[in-house]
Image 1 (cartoon, rainbow, N blue to C red):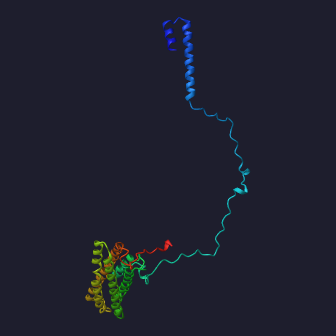
Image 2: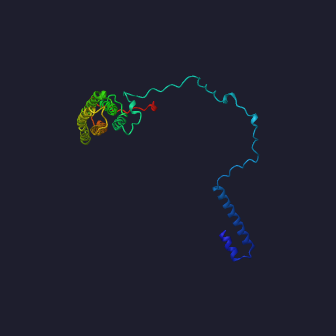
Image 3: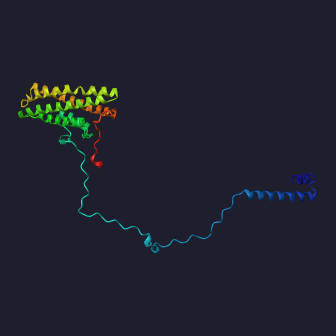
Length: 277
């Protein structure tokens, strides 16, 4: 086609050259059309021109037996109460005193409740430290009642309760020291010994201060009675705080004990709340 175009350009009046150029140009257009058809994607089939079928009336619709919904389950029988969940795990006694918030004029009870809140998350089964600490909290709550009492007949019980608290504190100290000897972490072992070794001294002071306070029952209001009460309150708060810190340190020390060192290892099992049963 290029050669025919040159002939036409050199002699534009030659009809033969013009006819030859036109023929070669038509042939080129045909070749281009064939190439386009070869590389072009196939055309989709034409869309149907007919309209979709009409929507049937709802009254004419029906379900076959195989397509029916399953039968409705029966309603619960009337008069039958749901199954009651099992009672929450409890291995403590006399916990009712801690179910209400103590008043501001009950500082000893507040301290006892603080210890009880710390240890009540653990089960005392197979854990003598938790059992002794819970026993101390309950006894300290009873001591709070006796201190606020104005009855002379409570003297002997006040002294006896303080003695039981001191004995329980000795159990906590003994168990904590045994645990510290088995702990492989030096820092945790030292911390446990430091917090538990304060307990016996505070427990002995509690017995002395309780005896002094017992001699003043029935004669509240004097300066000596107020001073004895303040000293007893401070001692009880220190004792409950020391036991609380000992429990926390003992929990950490139990993790750092080799299983082959002792067969009498304390079990730290969290008590399951009632709503998880």
